[in-house]
Length: 296
Image (cartoon, rainbow, N blue to C red; front, top):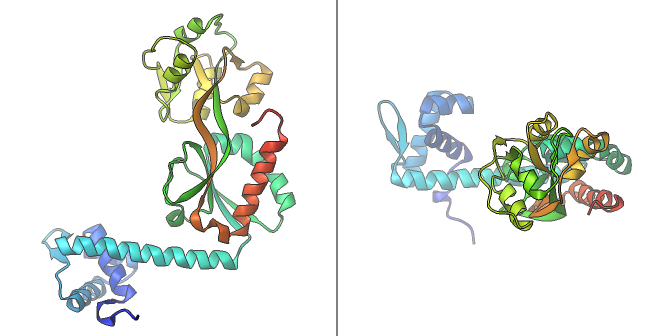
């Protein structure tokens, strides 16, 4: 059944209205769309005439959506994003050898990148593009085919493939000594901002009492590991990412490891099956993990 054409505006009108509603300014919308202010104003006015609804309150200093305009702005944004994603998906099918991958800073540089030559030898037809990004995000809007993620697979609209569980171990510089578990938690404790309760979990798992907050908190794992090597305290680190420092004696493991309940995941959009490069990368990752003894 065809849709009634009287309620279907042009994409130019939708783009103009969405930009004005989002930016609160005809001038800024015109700059973003590379149009004149009068052209944007005409497009929005034509849309209002077509719908017979006032979508914007035109104040002297700022333009704001009306109640009806706010509802329609969201619908316009969703429609434009849907068209954008559909076009991207079609284009990706035409160039199946392109793979854009979002990586975690420490995991990407320490574990993944050194192994990428093996992937490219196996799949020379694939061209890789890397981005560094942490946490869940809209992979469609970001034009990302797959993402490496640490933590829990609570990522709406994405499929999760578990690579391996996240195990951490208290590590410190050789100068910091700890003969018992109680000695470990008496040292200055370092933590990651995204995991403020990790020390509590480790302590509870080993029968220790509740701990006060960590003495130092870091945004990134690599920065915390550097502080740990410098002797600033003890940190819960994933040993597989710091094998070099542990082997050289720059870091020493002070106590038992612990599975914190999270994991390292490969996240792919629901449409990822249409991209053979993403499937090939997932299969290769699983092979890499399996081939390393003790890695899983």
